[in-house]
Length: 366
Image (cartoon, rainbow, N blue to C red; front, side, top):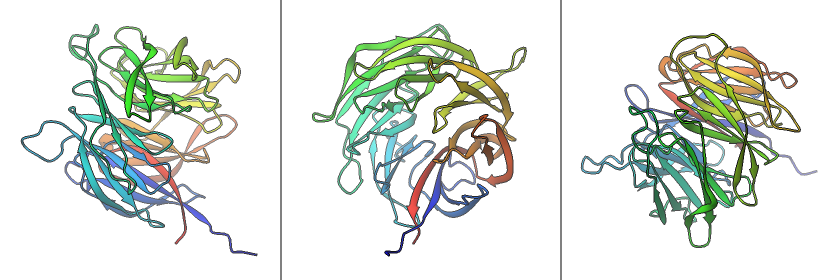
């Protein structure tokens, strides 16, 4: 019988590389304990806070808040090659994001395009991916316009993420400054972002939509609202790219008083549980998802054992959750109860300077 190749799990952690941070960190993850072992680190991107992996696992893309030029105020998107086996990153190239403070990047399922959201200028761009994984110049760009009710934070648009849907036909863009989720149809032949039949859905004013998660069944979308400390649930028609509101739930405990801001949101691989981070309350809100209606029921609030949990990630098996505590420089590993969704600290705490984004990649053992 032919020898079967075993796999191991790599974890990529994007950071704000100010001070001690070296950029993007690569860790090996123990499948039994969830412990992380540092493998390598990669520089080349300024403030590589958010990451996206190519579907083939051979390239990684990172936002860069500045392209390194004193004359250029725009941010950039950086492409890295991923070494087989080790997962080590090598910078391929960078391209302008055509906006300031890029904060989110995604790749379509064909691996032909990368998409970037520029928070500062409130715009999105589409960039072709070359056969070697490098990025070509942007093939399309859309500038958002407008404002909302908070005069301090919503004087203009702030595109906070861009998310390709499970059908690979549409991209959804929560805009914190507009209190809208913009919807674009993807033209993967011409390389264009085209406003959908219903070009946006309105969120309650002052909510500040930030990130979103698609349910594995493709019928629901959940948007986490940074300013309102809420999650808005929608039905989703993937044929038409149309959202319909079903529910809004707070991410904070009843009666809690203090300053907090939501950040990241993910569903378990089974779709049975949803998780969202609270920065200030410093917790992860755990919800059970009704299997037939998509409604959310609060299960628990779990302290992240650190300060300002910006983003987090669930490993592909759904057995572990890694919480990135930005201000306390730690990534804390939690075990996930598959039946209840509850989180239990494993005791594994990894020191990572200003951690933000967490991404997983299964690779063959070398």
